[in-house]
Each structure stands twice: as structure tokens, then as C-alpha cells.
Image (cartoon, rainbow, N blue to C red):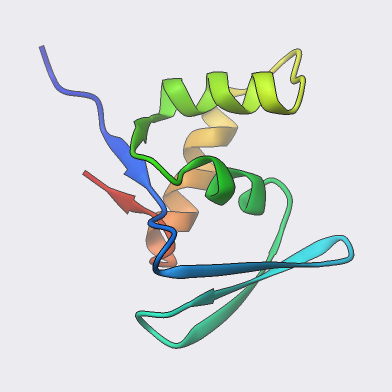
Length: 90
């Protein structure tokens, strides 16, 4: 059985600051600041500890009272965050 990919946004590498409807995320390792819209900041906040996409979906559903969460949409957002270097996948 294949091991599920675990995702993490280490808190020591990111500084997250809300800017009205957007959020600024400073990535210490690269020195780059990213401006993100929801749900990316919420995903980063939830990924302080490594977890699978399925576990993340449950955390977000509970934390934000999501009735009809979309696993495909979450997978797409995770891949975008990995590509930007803000989330690590293992």
C-alpha cells in the first residue's frame, strides 16, 4: 500500500500577515513575499504540523465549517503552494 503524501508549511520559514481580504506571506528561505487569497492562508495556517491532504481536509472542514469540501480543489491548491515553495511535500 502506498504511503500518503504528507504536507507541511514549517512555521519557522513563513511569516503570515493579513492584508484585508488578502494575506502577505514572507518566505524566509528565499526572501520572497507572496500575496495570497483565501484559501491559501488558511491552508498554510493549518499545515503547521505535517499531515496528509485527507487530514488537512478534515481540519479545514472543522475549523471553517465547510459543508461540501472539494478534495480536487484542495489538491490543486496544495500543488500550487508546493510549486511556490511555501509547502513541503514528502
